[in-house]
Image (cartoon, rainbow, N blue to C red; front, side):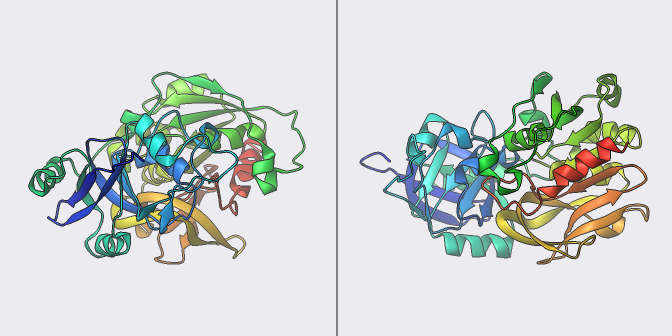
Length: 378
């Protein structure tokens, strides 16, 4: 943080304002204000494309104490629209750190605000719902920022996958370091290669690392790739990635997924889960404030096990909209939201949460092995 931190202000569309001091880049930004309950992993959050157009408020009381390093990025850039904390750690203490969080955000053009009354702000969001917001550390005028917040588009109907997807297909075969994932330690090297075509709706790097660690040669394709173009690549399986925005607005992806059903095993995560649900005949809706954090309890019908899971989503698949041929496999124990679904006859399944989560938890790593088994038995 600079020696003299500038005043900053977060303004919500409902007219409330939340003062603090700026860090990171100076300037204005707008986005949907949301909160994340994770106690660590802020760098992965900042670089997750699923947070595109969102101002993320961290609920942990102090953020930034482990600094930042290039190895923890989930993509090639920062995607959050803004970043808010109660207290920015004045000390960076970690052997992997290369710079402070403030310097990291400044280099990536992300406006930050510290000194927020995050407890009160999160209670406000839980009561009123996620809403449009504006943040400034250069001109914190309340009336100006409220007007900026009210002028930005609503998340309903906003196709953001097109804004974060890759421009052209690319190959990925780099596996991650198994020492960072307990369940991957001692995993035998595989000689069987499987070709996976992964739709990039905002894909996270750790998903690619985990597929590659299981013997997958991944071809990542843009969000609007047609089913025919995917089948021309002769995949053993198709992956539907995470991403931002309203799933119902991704009509091109829904159509492609529907055309691929029954032709190849399909595995979806987060936005990919919602797109699969829509392709199977279900509906989606926007949640009041969503799920964002690393401690959501989810029950799995196959084993009756309770998984602690990492989430980042503001939309959900409506359970009673799904046809009888589609099975709900995972349910959130806090509010009953559909967290997983499956069509056995079509060899398609998905989860709303993040089994690849870095830094964790890793309770749901097995889902990648389930995908491998589906491809091997196809």
